[in-house]
Image (cartoon, rainbow, N blue to C red; front, top):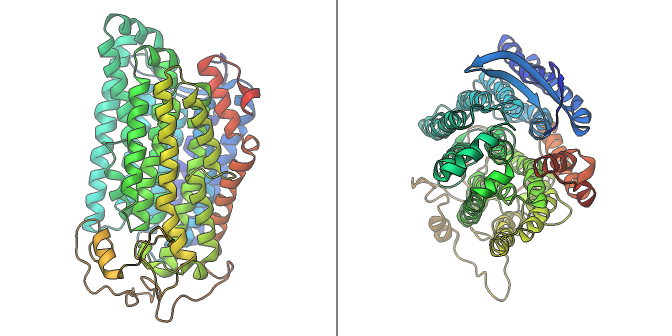
Length: 571
């Protein structure tokens, strides 16, 4: 690791700017425009502070702030290194556009408790940056648990029994992962190594591994699974689909920016900075972790195929895509690590686009089920066009971000010393890409290539080898759609064209079919501009990834932890 450390308040300022925004948001609760203005200003300030550290970090510097000794000689310190900056850059940049989008979404639905919502959002970003810049396991644990607390009001925002149940389940899973597994693993690391400082624990853990490898493997499992709980790795994944009861901006926060990425980031710290690649390989834990990740992304993809609710399909897609990140890093090859790290921003841009699109559809039409979206492409052409681009990237189609990161992971898998394991992981990536097409294509097909009058409830492209039409009622009942939702509750009185909400929206196409709109009239600019910018970012990451800074950071991290020079071969 680099030894060029600069004392600086910038890591602390990056954490505190959104914490300050919480107080300003609450104080402005009677003035909505001012309240939302604080969110935007805090997002811009946070990104500016984080981005100001990028040139120095790429030149080998680290920025550090310390409050002093906290407990057992451990300092409460923040340090901006390459890995932390990658996560912080992503979260702070995407918060800017999420702030605009959230304003349009919450006002469009006239949601209650908007001040609490915006305040919790800002607090979540403060905790996320704290996780990014934590210097040791104790500090990252504190912010990790704080993130669970401040995001609970977002998950339970609707205040229905379903929302409260989802919130309690979210807390139960994340507190088990953090309060038991991560905390227990941290205590064991301190017992074995005498320190919890990132980059300084591997020597003590290696001595333990030489005398008692089973305990060393157990410590690794505690930490990896503890952070993996927030990353929704199986079998600790079921909280995430249930959390879809939250408003769509929360789903974007959970799935693309802060919560699940904090879990993947924590796993990265364990692999690269706590055990470090050499020791991880020596105790034989990288292949089991990669295998669990491969099992997760394949299984989640199969489950996604059967979800008619768009947000739940996206939720299982997230479970799948997060495990790409974990598997890529667990390969412990230069290309694999770069691919896994690059998939953090790649997935964020693509998945945030998908959730933004789902939210725009909900606000404008109150349509949530894929089986009710036939022809919606003419009502929301920009939204569904952006959805199509992001979905293509999720499947690994070239010219979108997902292709670049997955290509590096594929090459990294084929470059493993364990050739058979590498071939299996590479094959899993290819199969998963096909499954991605299988569960995203029906959404695109039903939006653009089917009419409101005649469509498949589980839309499939028709061709001579199959894809016969079935009655709408029979198929949706079998698929857990309107006739029986994911929870098994009957949805009485549903008819394809008869569902209205109190605001006059239709759950599905209105009588006479969808209105034809232009990209300028399909929704408010507060939602359309963020969708356009974020999907453009996904394309930029797919076409010129080296121009964004994320690829350079991933290369810098891989070179540091593996002590190799690979920049010329990757950039």
